[in-house]
Amino acid sequence: MDVENLQLTLKIRPLAKFAFMCMLNRRNFAYQNDFSQSMKQALIVFHSKYGTTKKFAEKIGCYFNSMNVEANVIPIEKFRKDLLTGADYVFLGCWTNGTFLLNQKPEKEWIDFVKNIPIDKNQKIGLFTTYNILTGAMFRNMKKYLLTDETKEIIELKSRSGLLSDLDKQRLLKFLN
Image (cartoon, rainbow, N blue to C red; front, side, top):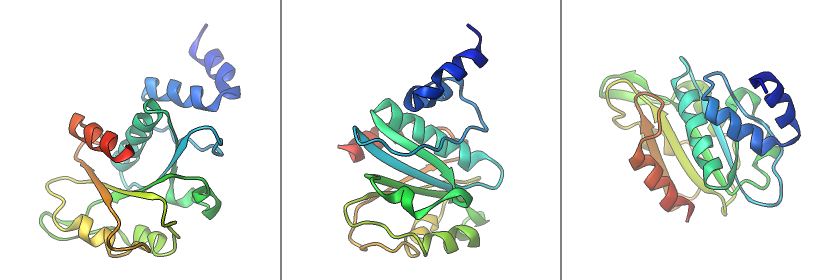
């Protein structure tokens, strides 16, 4: 059976399709699906300029999927507030904007998006970013725009290449439990 026929077969099983796409490691793959009631769910929303942040979001989604958490990976342009319903985990990510160590902040589009996203008090939050040299004050600047309790535990993930490191996987596993 060729890849195209297998993809058609998997259309009836969205979670299996997502796992298949993770295995193929397609760079331009963004998965969007309504959540089922049977397992934990994660909403991963990203803003990417060159594709590295999108790749990182997809890797996080693939890892969630491997841990039996249904992941919904979407760019901020496709976000709808109803996607938050039923999400146990909400991950928000963008690329690091700024010069080397100074003035590092999220881009205006991401800031405007996050200022209007209502996070439920029961949802666990994650922030992620991609960078060239260092992240500097990036996470502190990301957090100040969130509409959430300042004492809430928030996991922070960063990647230079868009790949999920073994340390990131360990931290995510601890965060999921």
